[in-house]
Length: 104
Image (tube, rainbow, N blue to C red; front, side):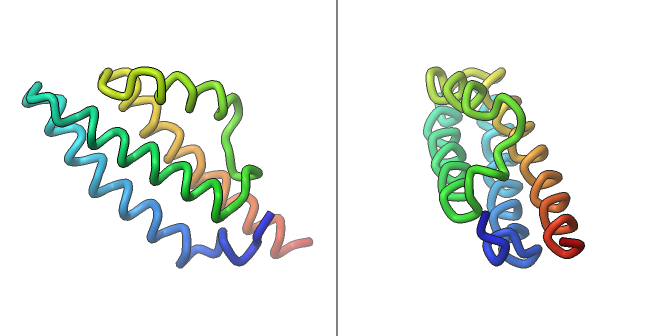
């Protein structure tokens, strides 16, 4: 695990980017204008970059299976909700890992 990569100031940038994108995805689903799929693909790429930077240790339980589900049908609303949950769980996990690293 790259402790520097999960520093609060670093991960906050990732999650702020997701928050902005998540709002756009939500609006696209409400509008049913077909834009959600492309935005979701951006969100998936963002999540994958986060994993590459921070290390796969930050991946939540069943994360790889859940990510595969999302990648299979990124335009579906259920996949949007699942990606949002992955980001939320990853944020909590990085905070936990930071605490463990600080104690350890």
